[in-house]
Image (cartoon, rainbow, N blue to C red; front, side):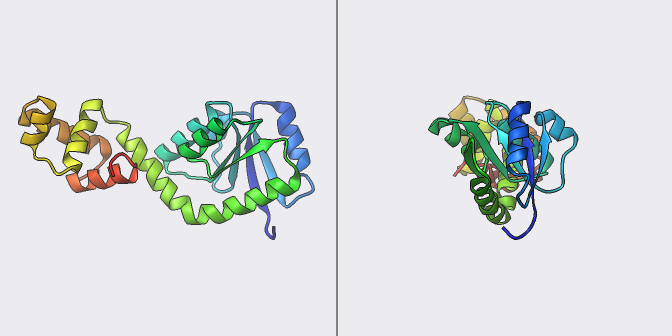
Length: 200
C-alpha cells in the first residue's frame, strides 16, 4: 500500500479496539477508534473506511444513516468466528467486505487496499441505492403496492381493481407516494424504486 489509509474503527469492546489499533500501529493505516455508531454519527468524518464490529445492530444502523444523509463511506464488517449468514447479511445490507478477527496487519492492509479500489467504482452506486431505499422505506404497505402497480404500467383503474380500492383512492396514494419519495413525477418514482432494487 502506497498511500496512507484512514480506518475508522467502530467497536464497543475497549480491549479489541486497543488490540486492533496496536496491530496497525506500524502500518500505513491510521486508526481512529469510536465506541459505537451514535458516537461516530455525531462526529461523521469526510473520508476514510469504516471497520465496524458486527454486533447485529451497528452495521445496519450506519448504513441506514448513510442512506438517509447521503454521506457514504465504504464499510468493512468484522467479527470473531463470523457465520456465513452474518457475512451475507452485512454484505447484502451494503458492507463492501467482511473479515474475521483476529487478523494481522498484512491481511487487513490487503482488504483495505481492495476496498479502496472497490469504493471508487461502487461508491456512488451504493449511495444512490441506499438513498433510494431509504425513500421507499417511508412508504406505507399500500403506497408500495400502488408503486408496484405504477411500475408495471397499470392505470389507476387497474391498480384499484387489483387492490380492491377506488381509482380516486389510488390517486391519493400516488400523490402521497410522490411526496414521501421526493419525486416530481411517476417516472422518477419508478426510477427510485428500481435503484432501491424494489422493482425490477
